[in-house]
Amino acid sequence: MGSSTITETQNAPLSLQGANIFNGDSSLANATNAVFDWPSFEFAPIRESEVSRAMTSRYFKDLDKYAESDIVIVGAGSAGLSCAYVLATARPDLKIAIIEANVAVGGGCFLGGQLFSAMVLRKPADEFIKELGIDYDDEGNFIVIKHAALFITTLSSKVLALPNVKLFNATCVEDLITRTAASGDVNVAGVVTNWTLVSMHHDDQSCMDPNTINAKVVISCTGHDGPMGAFCVKRLAAQGLLKRNRMGCLDMNRAEDAIVRGTREVFPGLVCAGMELSECDSSNRMGPTFGAMVLSGVHAAEVALKVYER
Ligand code: AHZ
Image 1 (spheres, rainbow, N blue to C red):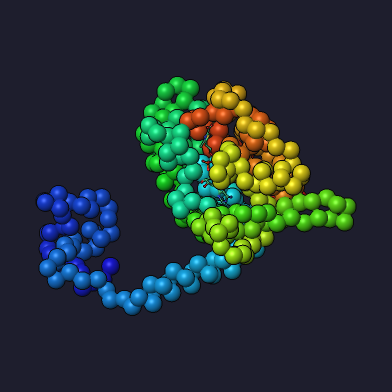
Image 2 (spheres, protein in one colour):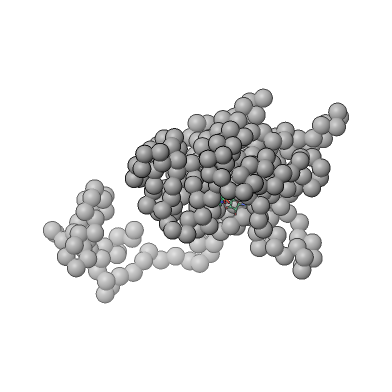
């Protein structure tokens, strides 16, 4: 904050119509007891190119750094971000790239199954919510967070603050990198990425080549089938490398257990978590209950570390 914007006024904390804005332990309030002098207000000066360089230099440095990642997580929905949180916290030595096709993170957590805002998670997924420090109503066998967005924004803020994680949003995985051993065995060795808007225009523009990220483990959390969903399972199935089984009809009890139990390395180098698994295993859909997404993410983190250490 530029010092020119603050006038120190004794006993005049930053206030809005007499109400203190920084009631808590704000360093701004403590340090300055300040008010903004609105008539003469001005920001610290900047040149436009400084803004561009501040962003692009960091982005390209990240592209360079994460071109060789330890783990790539595809999809920043509830499963992908839960997985990222556990993995990146447990192993600060690992470089973890998250690729999210959408501009916003959250997948089905912001709307989708959450048309009515509140988010239901069956126990024992409450353990993860306690770890995140989010308030909830305890309803016995399940808990309710007052808004799904509170869950996903809290989780994503914690994930994004970790120094070993980079989120590339508005970027989609449009193919997988594979390696074929002399034996003929194939494994996944990374992802092929592109700006999502570019990927959407392959049909009406001339060839726009993608980017690549090599990784020892890819964790796919792209959700159930849809325009973007179940990407990695569908890609491998299209090549005849994996058998695809379509998602079954809704049954919350069967679905959630099946997804958490079934979280695994579905193909060498590719761990699958969350609803994408239903396209592998034909497991039921669960609709708007999210305990399985969270705990499938936790399970996937464990599986991925075993694959990584192999
Ligand atoms: O944008 C997608 C979403 O944020 C992203 N994604 C999909 N394909 C991608 C690709 N590259 C990069 N090729 C991609 N990102 O993956 C995220 C998936 O989030 P999600 O919330 O759809 O999946 P989830 O498994 O974390 O949670 C699913 C929750 C359920 S259950 C359910 C039902 O039973 O009906 N419906 C939902 C939404």
